[in-house]
Amino acid sequence: QVQLVESGGGLVRTGGSLRLSCAASGLTFSTRHMGWFRQAPGKEREFVAVIHWNGGSTNYADSVKGRFTISRDNAKNTVYLQMNSLKPEDTAVYYCAAKRSVYSDYARAVTYDYWGQGTQVTVSS
Image (cartoon, one colour):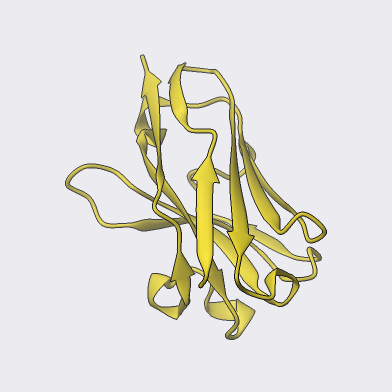
């Protein structure tokens, strides 16, 4: 049974930082590209960041570029999202997801095979 479990969400003030973690089990983590998506109330789920299975490539949404960093530890089956300089518009439920298909269509949620349950991030002004 595949499980992706996010943690690290919470309430933070504008300009603050949070580090999200996503622990994977039941799949060969080291062969999966891992992505982070988010969904704010009343909005569609949107791509945030992705990391190639070998850690050699990363990509970010323009809205988070320069503020967020995605990383992974294949020995721990865990992917991270370091979020700095947080803004109120970053408030959302954050989901991690795993995919085995081609890396290049990383922004399309439909290409991901497995999803976590999400963790709430709230940034107060």
